[in-house]
Image (cartoon, rainbow, N blue to C red; front, side, top):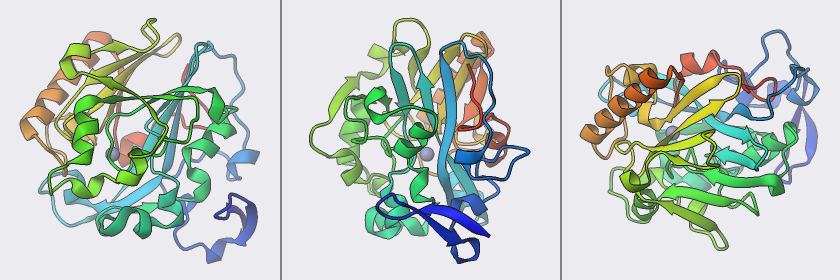
Length: 312
Ligand SMILES: [Zn+2]
């Protein structure tokens, strides 16, 4: 079987499916429409009227890791997690949340990530980068007005520097920590991803800017949720038809984490991480939001996936 791939220059090439060793599409976690088994470009998208505000759920492949790195102290078993990221189409400008892994994770993962690939091994095609995935749903890099960073770990920095007109939102505490992390989380910060010239940063100030409303219309609110990282934030997206959607990101990696049955495998403050889950529970209860956890392989399968479908 021939599969369309992309080489290091982004050119389309046809390759034999048997020759692909770490193809993202071979994972059971790769996004697939239920009834179609074709390349995404050829797959039929759901045609329907949109409210004009859309939430698209993408992923840049998966990470092959160990259970203990996701759920603290829960053993050495193999565990594969999706690497989600999100695009919001809004009349006032398009918004990318996180952007998943940087494209370099697909080109030279060890060269770019270093020894951390022994703990978190990215399974990603070059075509899975967030810029090319935006194009699949008609969003040009120039049309992205904001990039919102939940935090600056390596599986969330794929958008930085790739959207030339975008302002990049991050918590100031996260930005500062990323340049001077503790030894135990240093591997999760790839300085080349966020320490680049010409970036237009906007810094948020923890609880002093909490619930920051990006467009002033309630569509996108940023919620300060430290613990996993010092300046982590989650997002409450409110859509005209779907209603509220709570993107916990890594404030709750998995359903166990959300249910207070596991702490994250990587954490700077367990107390803050538990408080942040409690804070998000209150928001979910108050709003009735659909909850999207950060990296849960089972939960992730249940959502409508881009480029085939979206929430509006
Ligand atoms: Zn993550």
